[in-house]
Amino acid sequence: MQQGQELASLYVERWNAASGLPGPCPVRDVLDKIGDKWSMLLVMTLASGPKRFNRLHRDIPDISQKMLTQTLRDLQRDGLVARQVFDTKPPAVEYRLTPLGHSLIVPFGHLIEWANESIGRIEASRLHFDAD
Amino acid sequence: MQQGQELASLYVERWNAASGLPGPCPVRDVLDKIGDKWSMLLVMTLASGPKRFNRLHRDIPDISQKMLTQTLRDLQRDGLVARQVFDTKPPAVEYRLTPLGHSLIVPFGHLIEWANESIGRIEASRLHFDAD
DNA sequence: CGGAATCCTGAACGATACTG
DNA sequence: CAGTATCGTTCAGGATTCCG
Image (spheres, chains in turn orange, purple, yellow, blue):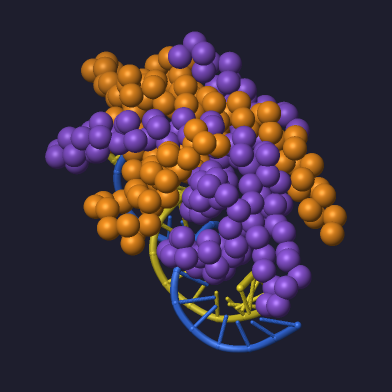
C-alpha cells in the first residue's frame, strides 16, 4: 500500500484536469489501450514470435478484419509492434513486437497473474452481492 | 519474453470462444474493469485511505455523480471496495479498499511505472508515424 | 448527504462487400 | 494475401432532474 502510494498520486494528479499539468494523463493513455478489446490480446499473441496477417486472424478467430487491421496500426503507431513487408507475390506482411512492445509483457503479466489468482474471489463476491 | 509466454497462452486460449473453455475469459473480465474510465482511478484514490462519497467527488471533479455511484457499486460487487454506512443525520457513507482491493495496487503499480517510463517513446513513435 | 431515474450522444465495434 | 470502404448497431458515459 505504501509502495503504491507515490505512483497512485502521480496517476491521480495527472488525471485531474484541475491539476494544471500539461497534456493528457500518460497513464490513462496507456490504460485505454489495455482496456480496448483487442490490443493486449494481440500483444500477447505476438509474444511467441512474429506472425503474418492471416496467421493472426486464424489465431484470433473472433476479431474482425477491420479491427485486426486497425488495432495493428494503432500498436504500430505507438511503437509496440513493427510491420515488415516482403516483396513477394502475393505480398507477405509480418508483424512483430518491438523491444518496447516486449517490455510491456512483464508488467502486463503481473496483471494477468493477479486476475487469475483473484477471479475466484471476485466471482464469489459477485454471487454474494447479487443475492440481495 | 519466455516469462510471459505461459501467461500469454493462458490469456489467449481462454479468450477464444473456439477454445471450448467454459465461461468468459477471467483475464478479460478483470481487464475490462481496468480499462474502464474510472475504476482504477477510484482504486488509486482510495489507496490512501477510506473516503466518503462527496470527498471522492471533490478529489475527482471530472467524474459525474452517476459514474461515481455506478463505479463504486461495481467495485463493491467485485469485492474490491467495502461500503460502510454510519447512521448519523444526515447519513454518512464511507468507502474503503478491501484486502483484495489493496492486493491490486502492486501489480497495477507495475503498469503505472511502465506507462510513465514508456510514454516518452510512445509519443515519439506517434509523431514519427503521423509524419508520413 | 448520498444517491436514483431518465434521456441522449459519440465512439467503438461488427458485418458485409470490394480491391491491388 | 492483406488489406480498404461503408453502413448499422450497441453501449459506456455525460447532463439533468428528482428523492429519503
